[in-house]
Length: 226
Ligand SMILES: Nc1ncnc2c1ncn2[C@@H]1O[C@H](COP(=O)(O)OP(=O)(O)O)[C@@H](O)[C@H]1O
Ligand SMILES: [Mg+2]
Image (cartoon, rainbow, N blue to C red; front, side, top):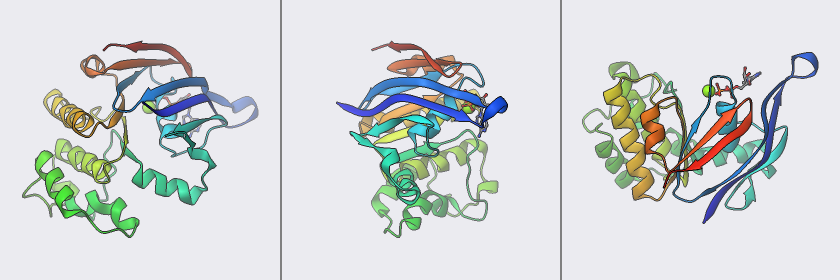
């Protein structure tokens, strides 16, 4: 079942002589539950692609459809709600709020939506992420690996259909990196969640069902592994 379509997606930053065509007519479709690795050299347009799929930014032309609906038909306000509820975004640097504790960081998107916290899901995630007992720690009291677990918890709290991660293990050692990828992989399998991960790590690309390579803003390769 198709969950996501990227259609002729183009993004140009700036204008005139300084314009950068970061993404150039990229199209592909994603089936629900797929685990896709996006690879490509630095500056090739990977983060731009992920941001557009997550509704963080708007394209110059082309579009992204989630479950058949064009996400850019939404107003900026609706797009902010979309980002909190329908996709889970994970970055290389965890982007946690320093003055909020583990639980407050994890539940921030839910609180911003004015919704009540699903305590059962929160407890389940804290256990799965190995954060039980650290509920009230602040980010600076946690290791890098633990901080990334909190960021993943925040992304998974709403059980989004699609998780988008931009080099989520780029700042971690190989042991933490493997554990973080396993957590994302487990969630992908257990919830039949679609997982799209940008990575430089060969081992991660090997775990994926499919590898998409971006070069100079274009889709250079799209390879199904299984
Ligand atoms: N906000 C921005 N303003 C101007 N140029 C940008 C912006 N974001 C990215 N770029 C440029 O777009 C190109 C692709 O960047 P990016 O998507 O971040 O690549 P990658 O994630 O593959 O390293 C690069 O040339 C980069 O400098
Ligand atoms: Mg990038």
